[in-house]
Image (tube, rainbow, N blue to C red):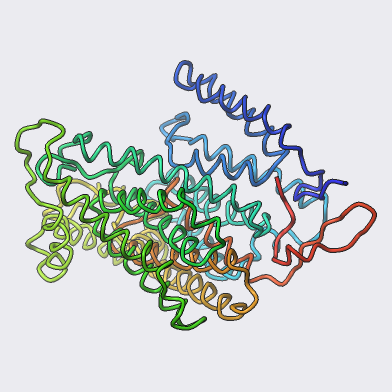
Length: 507
């Protein structure tokens, strides 16, 4: 049988051929701990090789690598290895775009349903260079936004929404989420972390490799939306024991992060996912397959963390923070009602005041994308202990960085994500396969989680942004009308089993 024409305009590689670049990648991981520069070279060579053979495989490796800040620093600017991986995939996609002439470069890279607010965001980002307080940081941030919202979404969109392709991609996402969850639970149980993160007397808030608990909780919260959707509405294989294991670990990690934003975002995501499923396909969609993983598992996880919080596995003396798990939950409400009685919320109020000051002083072009930290250092407000790296709020961050239109771009962009994710599920509710419906609903849940959490944090960073990127690509794939065509031996017929927008790019 002839090979299917791949996304790169080349024959579908045999799995045995992927072993060799995989071995080079494995050697690079080992070398990275011994001789970091050699490890980076080996990882880069292995990934470049893999990229020429399999786009889903390359994306899966990127997903696993993205949370780790491994890389090199040049002139005070850190270049993550995952950035290099994204550049390699972008180059390969650009080459294939030039060779195939199947559609315009604009359609291939910026043809998503969200292109209008995205263009506004990018234009404002470039214009902000004119008034940037830290031009170098602004340039880096612009490249990051292009990587996250343009390159990665376009690359993921090239992979047809078939179960074979996305089992590998979602498998990579669930694997790294589960491994980070285990590490986070280890941190929580044995108080492996800074004193600033101490909670429940003898424990710390889990942050895995993200450096801060809130991004860790935000990442796991967005992943949880996909897990719950696949178990609730996906094919039978998605309800296997491993899926339940991932759901339990991810739910535990969201609780162990003690991120109030992640807690509220998870509740909002599952709640709105249930509402949309009910509205589209009836009340019977609120069944045990969705309720147990989406609602019961998080409740049990909260109880488990509450009980574990009473232990002292670290054998430490009484710590500065005596706030219990239950106290953290109740303070989620009281912090909103009485913000000045809670240090975290009071600190955010000072940061938000600083961001508003930046916006008042620079209403047109802002202080430059990513420049709020510099502004906070130069113009600290009274009561602020340290200059915050971000405005702890996406909308105020973009308002300070890009001017008043930055807030318009944020609201427009997120409204576009939500509108199109619901719209495509509504338009194709009766024709989507269980896998496609579950992925679409999970994408919607990840978007809701991101939107809600970003009222109190900024979730745009390496690794953290991956579930959202996958969700945006899924919505783009489901939104499209273009059919996938593949060739079979002796016939040039289209493959009706993959009638979803995208190019057949099986591994």
